[in-house]
Amino acid sequence: MIFWSVAAVMAFGVFLHAVATLGVIRLPDFYTRMHAVGMGDTLGIGVVLAAVAIAHVATADSLVASIPIVVKLLLIIAFYFIANPTATHAVARAAFTTRGGPDPITTEGRIQSAGDAPVSTRPEAGGGGS
Amino acid sequence: MSELEVIFSVGAIALTLTALLYLYRVARGPTVFDRLLGLGGVGTKAVVILVLIGSVYGRLDMFVDIAIGYALLNFTGTLAAAKYFEEAEEDEGASAASAPGAGSP
Image (cartoon, rainbow over all chains, first blue to last red; front, side, top):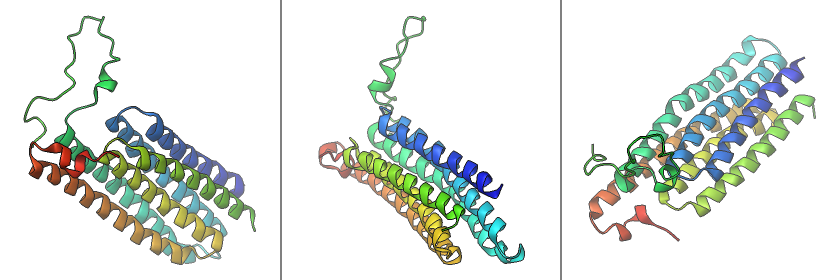
C-alpha cells in the first residue's frame, strides 16, 4: 500500500522532470525553454519531495519523531515555489533587456492567413528598459 | 535494501539522467541565458537528488539540511548571474559583440 502510493507520486514527479527536460532540449527559443523550466521543475520538485515526506512519515518510529524532517521538506518545497519563478523571472528580464523580444523562429510559423496583421518580432525601442 | 529504497534509487538515477540532458543545453545553448537556465535546472535537480540519496542512506535528517543550503546557494547564484549579465550588457552599450551576454563559442 505504502509502496504503491510512494511509487505513484514518485513516478509523477519524475514524469514532470522528464517533460521539463524534453522542453529544454527541444523547444526552439530561449523564452519557450524558460517556460518549460519554470513550470515543470517547480511542480516536479514539490511532487518528488512530497513522495519522500510520505515515505518518511510512513516508516518513522512515531509521528512526532518525523515532524522536523517533514517540516524541513515542506520548507524546501515552499522555498522553491517562491524562488524558482523569481529566478526564472530575473533571467527572463535580463534576456529581454539584453536581447529584446522572442526570436523570429517562434513567430515566423504563425498563421498569417486569418486576417491578422503581421506580427512584429521585436519590441519597440525602449520597451525593455524598465 | 527495502522496497522504498529501490523507488528512491530508481528515481535518483532517472533524475540524474535528466540533469545530464540539461547539461546538453548548458554546453550547446546559443546564448549565455540558455546556459544560465540550464545551470539553474541542474541545481534544482541536485537538491532533489540529495534528498533522495539521504533517504536511501537512512540519513535524511542530515541530507535535508544540506539540500536547504544548496537550494539557497543555487537561488542566489542564479539571481546574481542574471543581474550581472543584464548590467554588463547595458554598460557596454552599442558594442554588444564584446559583452559577456553575447558570448558564443
